[in-house]
Image 1 (tube, helix red, strand yellow):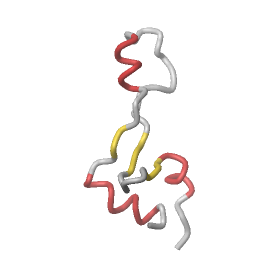
Image 2: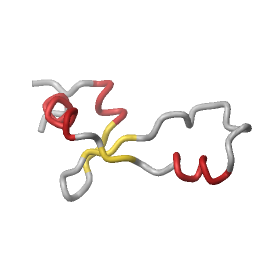
Image 3: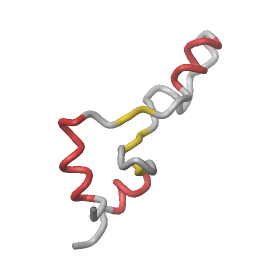
Image 4: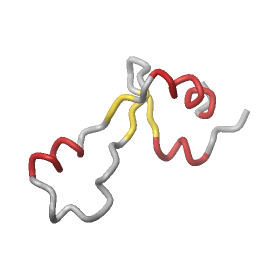
Length: 61
């Protein structure tokens, strides 16, 4: 089965097998955000268990 092109650009596996994604709200319009909020949004986030199975299949694992 082919890997989903959009999914491979947005998600990555860690060494321990967790799926990571970037958080939302960090593309533009950050001049009104506090530095603290931007710093916290800059960190990657673990994908929820509800979406994990579908994304794992899309990524060919």
